[in-house]
Image (cartoon, rainbow, N blue to C red):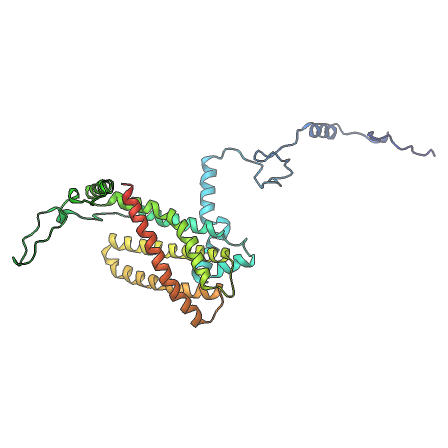
Length: 324
């Protein structure tokens, strides 16, 4: 029995008695000739249904209308099931989302800024559809002044129209204010309010970091990182926006069906009272303190928040009027 000699490198030893199936050899030859498929996003070699480098799906064909509708319904009803889990945790466990994110348990929930953007966009979108009728009514102001009841009283000099506005020594400002006044009178303030609603979301990106920094001063010892403060207020304002959406919908329902006015008023009252209670509970969970210490810091935060929010909203009003 002769010894089997080793095959040279690169050669394949096939026993003489083995039969080669034509179909199998054809498949092998065809597979060896196929050029490896690469990801259309990052050009990495695809080894499965998804790219191992950027996670994009290998199948990126233009979807049909049916596929688009299926994706839309799946996104609304499922959203990886994270949306509903995130909203339940946001509504019924104050501060839990922030606590989970800081602890590193993040996969089960929507990212904080995505949640905030979704709810804020929904709120301002609904606000843009609210009927704005006679926001600022100048009809009475433009009518002739009524005679005073007491002839001995000094005669007042009210501003009866926009042309009466005059800032001595500031002609440019006077012209600008007159223009804003005329634009506001023309449509009773509708364009001004729409500009305010378009500017407020941008102003929130200044307001949130500022109020987070001021809250960090309240919790100086033990000190918390600024990122934790910012995440807390992102989640807190996401809750505020969700409550505002519910209040807005209830008020609109009461306007459409007056019989629901009592229910809408009661619901708005309950939802309004949830805001301070929720804030205190969230603060105590994220920044552990006793109830008395947390309540004291919440009162201080309320006054600071009110001042900063008032300045922010006032600045938005002025900026929107300046843009008319």
